[in-house]
Length: 527
Image 1 (cartoon, rainbow, N blue to C red):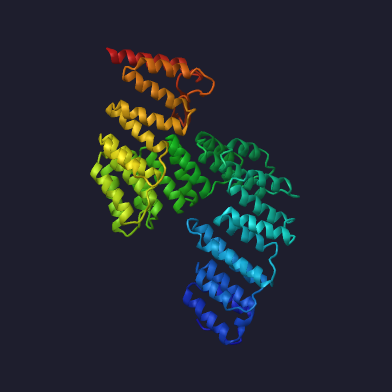
Image 2: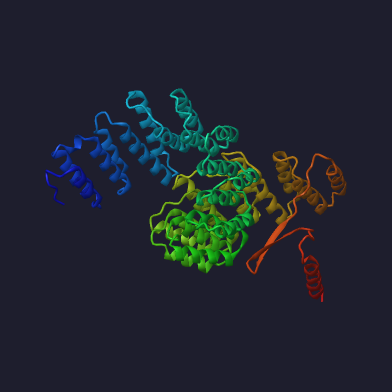
């Protein structure tokens, strides 16, 4: 690439727009330095933006910034935006978010230029990724500087507090907005959904004057995250009927809902839509497809999608391993894990949850214990409660209760319902009534008002013939301090419509015919 020493600013920008590699950028940067153009902050601004937007090279952009004496507010904004965008792309790492906060602090210490209404929202986005303490700190400084009256800053604060479940603070900011736009409405809807207040989120969503795709995504995602899978699919139907075009985020959320519901036909329709509209090439959609096909029992479809992915992320590997483990394909799950390691992909905590589940379903006790040790000593991953739960389940199913109790006593974290529930399940399989009694009592210590545990304890006593204890428990259940037992629920998809059934429920319009058919089946089996 040749650049004339007399290159005008317009020509310089035009040449920069045609660059495609870091070598091109460095060559143009060198030309700007030799020609004296590099001293102009507008030149640095364009070079910095190119390094970030086209090359995703934050270190190079930061060197450009640091080499600029007395950077103006536009350069600060560009560098902060670069950090925040990179932090959003890799949410598991806080390095870029912390870099943005450090740069914001440097700006405050220097005094010039002072942050403006465009800088504070960027600083707040970085603070959201690091912790609520930083959100409060930026909020305090914005108030002292007189910028809290700007709606754009109030909306950023609203989003920050709602991300940490501080809905009272978020709602106060929302109510104080002079003009509520779809961004502020969406932020509050997302906050209520994240806080588990999905009912409030739905009510608020219905009040949004003008919705966009992001607003629809917020409520669909909120329903999916809170287990309202049927509602999520239904809202997608409303979204399409209103003329909105689902994007990759919409597709990922609805695929998750279809996977949990076993709605393979609708999942396939969404797959076709993603392929036709070219939104299915992102990793989130591809991983969602693998997960959906796997949970719906179509392991062939899940493997086909997996094989079509050329650049497999760790999430892609984890999705396939978990699908295979879920359906008892233990040896295949272990084979995929070994394939992943051979390709140089480092496993994480999710990988080992799927792998240990595979060992549990396959009865591979020694292999499971070996992978549990491998996770800690070779990969440096500290076991979480899910890993301990898998090991307890693995040992319990094999009847190795002494080893299971030793694992519980040596756990580095406090045992919870996952641990004692896994042990209880194994005790019931092997009729270890004394140990089952211990497990249920531990569960009742964790959740005294859970009627399901009380019923389990009564069943254990009845299996052991301790009828006096059963009588005492059933008498105590008549008190007002124990809630009702949640009925079991199952669903089935027929002609693209999902039917839900609860234990002892006769609310379904065809319940009489269904029960007659079940009675006929039961009678035929007796014959």
